[in-house]
Image (cartoon, rainbow over all chains, first blue to last red; front, side, top):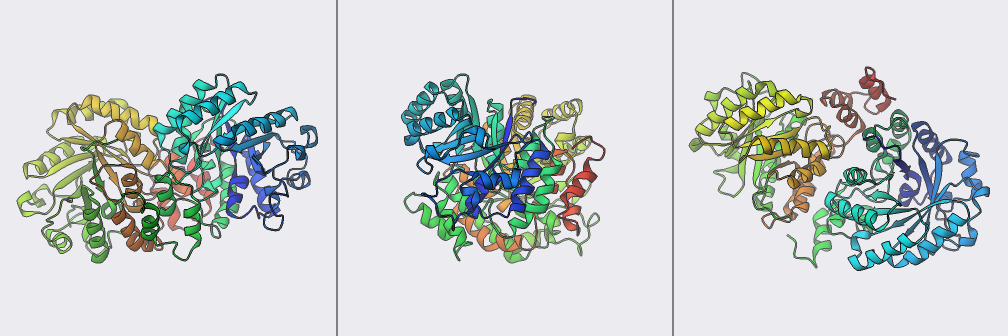
Length: 316
Length: 316
């Protein structure tokens, strides 16, 4: 379907960086940037905006912090149609550390929060808006939020100036009917606002859940190249661009950068669908235990991981 | 959702065999058989029923032919709740070569056909029914069939005694709205009959399309262990069993056989999602060109394959 309002946000560096502490070469980040420009992708989420009080510079590469000098080393003044986005976690950034938009190449700051942090998220997002940025709130782990708490959070967002809220399937535990329910609930609670979708691929449903969200009217779509991202990864940018027939998008540059940059990376970092991620996804659990398992010598002892994860359930 | 009519047909040996000419060790086939028995899966499709006039015994392993003696070497008299299925391709088997059910451990024969072969498929399926077998017709490549031809084929099936017809996404080119349309069309044309789904994973939609089919009322669900199958492979048995909460299914034996048999096989055979399969899927083309590409030294030159496949389209 042709809907010109649709925007694709490629989060390869930001979400993928969760797998290597944002230790990317400049060549890699530049290649991703140029490919997204050429492909007509709308936004590149290039990293987190974090405080050095929260994270170490020795452990984390520059895209955990997104200093202006690092950004400009890659994008110059970014005289392109590709907008740049950073994510900010509640409590990990001093609002005063965020420069006014006129002094930054960043176009959008997305505030990630859990439901109990919604007040703080709205305050930070409105602070960013006042400084001149586009902004969204990405309400994480919604699959664990009860109906009362979600309704209250949605009510708070409705009263705010924040223009966009995301349906975020942090644990990759949802299927189409759950995405439908949430998208409809968000639209009903937030008339006039934009709804986005950020899906994870634990059960191989990240792309299809994104399609469901499109059908429901969501217009901000997160994806990463070859699904590169935490654990099972994300909706793949290449499947999404192949699906969207929107004339602004070109698939060839996406395929090219996957071939030249992402496939070699895949030899070193083992993201994507694996049985331990399926297990945490089906149990609606955070993927961290599966990620630890995938780093352990017992990686392929799936039965042991299944037994460990299901011992408090009566699962066979 | 709990729907006791749902049946899972694991096609690991039959569809996976397309990747290695059915050259499986007996140990492998037995391990799959015992895992499916223990997991409560409904059917195991163990191979093709073919004539030796059509295929060579030296090139193809025993599961291309499914002789009774080979079957019994694996399953004995199959005194289990797991039913056995074989697939028959039109023109590749002499109907007279099919033994009466009382002399066979096979429970079901599924007839695969293209739309122009529907008359022959109905004749062969009814022949199998007369010999005592359960039967289905799997109408392949429906994404290439025009509406007039499909309506005529459905009308023919409606008038037949064949109880089950499959929606088959041979090229892995369909998404949820197309599956919905076909499932609804099949149900409308075939009142009282069972509808099945067989999906391929070129665009990472095999599992989600199977979920869509379930929501639409389809009760025969094809899958394979870790998606092992032609090209991009199939709906994964483990994601399907994890999704279905039906009390007859157990996930642990499925995870165990994947760990012990399928992961080692994956070191040798490279099925699953890869960019060339995405390209044929998005173009609604047969995956054979992508499979050849994946066997060539240029395997990772995705851009070259994309250029070659899209030269007659105006795709960027």
